[in-house]
Structures are given as C-alpha cells and as structure tokens.
Image (cartoon, rainbow over all chains, first blue to last red; front, side, top):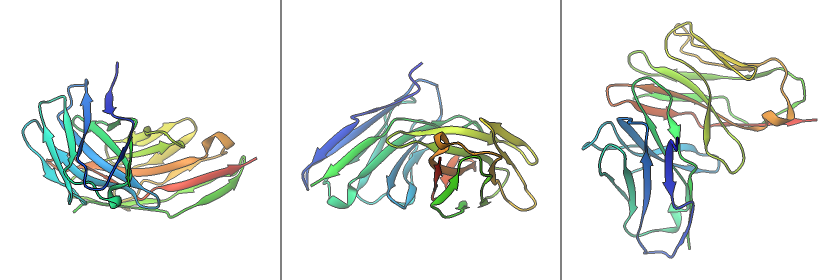
Length: 111
Length: 112
C-alpha cells in the first residue's frame, strides 16, 4: 500500500527553469494538497483540490500552478523558478473527516 | 478563515519530564483536529486525532482532548523520552472544501 507518492525526492534548478512536481495517491481520496515547508514557517498551503476537476489557491500560490489530472494525481508546476522557491514541498490527501496522509517530500533548491 | 495557533518553541525538556504543547484554533463548523509529528528529514506522520467535541485522541503515551468550549487541543505526555525529539504540528480539517490548516510547529528536544 503506497499511500502518497511524490517525485522527485530531490531537485536542483537554475533560476528561470521550469519543473513539475508529481504527486499520486492510491487511497481513492477526494481532497489533495500542496504545501511548502520553510524553517520557522511551518507548513504553508500553496494550492488544494477538494475534488477531481477543482483547484483553489491557498496561502502562498504566487509562482505556482497546479493540475488535478484525475482523482489520483495532483501536480505542482513552477514555470520560472526563483531562489525564494527553495523549500521542501509536501503533497497530502484526505477523505471526509479522516486524517491527511503525506508524501515523503521533495527538497527543491533553486540556485 | 480557519487558523491554528500553536505554542512557540523550541521546547527543551529532560527525559521523563511532563510535556504540554498548547494549541488553539478558529474554525467554522465542527472541524476534525490532529497532531502530526515530523522527525528530522522525514515527512509528517499522524500522531493522534479527534473528530468531535470531548473526544480524546491518544497514541504512544501522547494525549489530546478536543475542547470546543475553549477551542483547544493541547498535546500532553506524562514522561517524555529522547526518542520523542521532533517537530509537532497541530492541524484542523474543516469546511466543505475540506481545507487542512496547520499551526507553525513546535520543536521539541528531550535531553538524556
């Protein structure tokens, strides 16, 4: 039972490059989330998707786009990476009032 | 909107000391409440949860009670161990969009 799978685990980008972070869950959850975690800042919500075909902005959406490709997959895209986007990114999913399950994270460095 | 306010850290305790990490929340409706733990270099793991008022969540010696009257969900453990050293996050899940909101996290260090 894989749960929530994120790829890649590590990535180094140059300023201005683009990339997509992938997330997939195999628990048939409706809701999925993307967070970034920075030292001393806790987890900040970038985007979330309450169901297939819907997405909404969170606290820090600027510089990011998302796609809820189907019920399983929720990708996060950086169109033009900036050093301020250096962070650890977590994907999560939930169903109903149950707990959120998290991926292992993607450590992104933008140089 | 929803929000979670968590006791600021870092918190440093000696082994076998009593632990309390305060958490209060603001939310519409009847949220579910959670405590997550993050060990160094890892993702977040669910520690315990409560889905309605007066529920007590417990796991690995940790406890928290959902107090609707004080909008609180404080984490407690009677005797901490070195292996409990980690970052602890309080969180709530609420709303028709199932929005998941986290506190800022509390770093706990337990010394032998």
